[in-house]
Length: 330
Ligand code: NCD
Image (cartoon, rainbow, N blue to C red):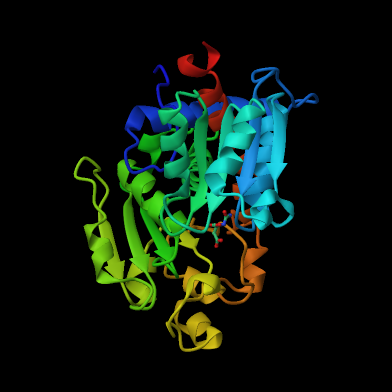
């Protein structure tokens, strides 16, 4: 497939071929990362700017390392020590990095829609700059959805990770769905793959209207539960999510202890799942809240470290596909 997507703002409109191209490309970069020299010249001469207006450990570092492994030049913007503190607008910041020759901007912001707004401005100015959304408010976090997909598909077939491997699999997403951009991106990718996605958590964090998050061309079904047991029953994968306390404006939870009692993943609860079940978490984890501490560290069940490792190959694939698409190399 020829890659045509110029910006990656979300997964809502991704089609099967795009997922498969991304998975295949990430798989070849995983091979590069296993070599002694883990660097290729693919994006030599391009400038990638990380613009994170919200805290991040994994995503920011992972994009940085991915860009470096592709031989791009990388700039890191830190809002606290930037001209934003002097009143500069986000769009003017973006234009400043444009004037320095940035080709790809990787943007995270606490408000949904900021990456889209910058992409629209870059298009309006006919700059050729690509925007990668690294998480915007409660909207989407496409690179996380893709690295979760790559982690799961690689477990099912390491040599040929592809979308169809997930057809008919049962995947539970547990916890703070309401505030989670990770859950939203995963709902799009997993249902596109034909997996059946079961959202579960307290009613305050799993509102009924999530049922409407359905793309009719996706064959996977979406189910909602407010009790853990039916969601876990025979599940192939369980994605746990962080309780996003920074986004909780109302009193949405009784207490963290009670949350763990009702919805925390523990060894006991694994018995409800498929015997080969694996647990994911995008991080950062509230240890002992979303998942018990010992389970989190158990490599037999936990894919958390693989998710972080997969992130580098997946972000290399995203930067590569976008950075070598016809518009940018012209
Ligand atoms: C997630 C995020 O920022 O949306 N983390 C991540 O990117 N690995 C999830 C979270 O913050 O809980």
